[in-house]
Image (cartoon, rainbow, N blue to C red; front, side):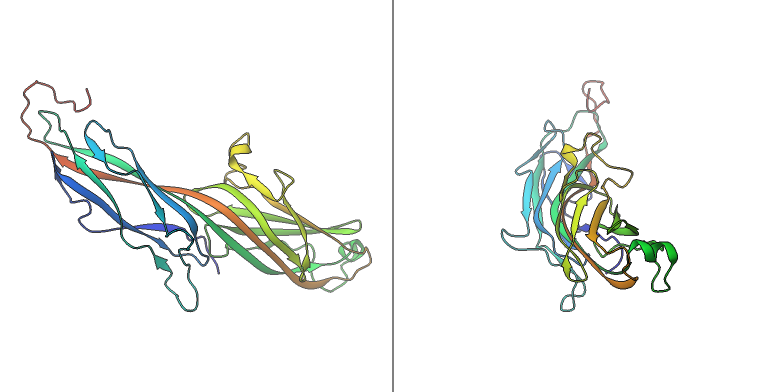
Length: 276
C-alpha cells in the first residue's frame, strides 16, 4: 500500500477511428480502470469540448460502475485491480467547412469519483517530560515520511509533539494524482485502538470542501493537513503504538484527446479558417 495511483482511461482501438469525415457517425470507446488499492464508487465520466456546429453527441455523461456497486481496487484475490465494461459516447461529424483539408478537434473526458484511503502507521507517543529529557524509549521528535497508501490522496508526513497534558499529530496529506480533491471526510481515527480526535486544519472540522475554501485549494497539493490530539499524562514514558486514519474523498480528473477530421480541401468561399 504505497504510491499515489489514480483511475486511468484505457482507450479502445479504432474508437474513434483515426480519421473521420463529414456526416460520419462514430463512438468514443474506453474503459476506466482502478489501479489503486481501494475501491472507487459514485463515478461519473463526462464528455466536453466539441463545437456543436461541427460535432454532435447523443449523451454527455455516463455513470460507473453500475448503481450501488464499486470499481474494485487491487487486493489478494484481484491483484491487477479492475476495469469497467466498455463505455461509449456516440457522436457524429455533422459539418466541415469548405476549403478545410483536415483539422483536429480536441475533447475532454472528465472523471469524478468517490474514493478512500487508510493509514495504519506505528508512531511514538509519550508525555511532555519524556519529550524534553529523551527517556530512551522511542523518538518523539523524529518526523515520519511516507510515500502514500495506494490511492491518489494519501499521507506523506507525520509530525508528533507532546504539549502539556496531550500529544498532537500533524498529518500532512498529498495529492499525488493529476486531478483535484473536491472534498474529504475523516471517517475514522484511532490511536492504539482507541478513538482519536482529528480535524482538518483548514476547517477545524472532520470535513473539507474545496467549494468552501476561499482560495479553492490549500497549498500546492490542493489538500489541507489534518491535526489529531489525545490526552497524555506529562510523565508518561515514550512507547510505540498504532495511528489509524480512514479518509473518504471526492476526486476530479480529466484527460485531453482529439479527433482528426478530413474535409474536401475545396474552398468555395475563399475561406480557410474553420471557425471564422
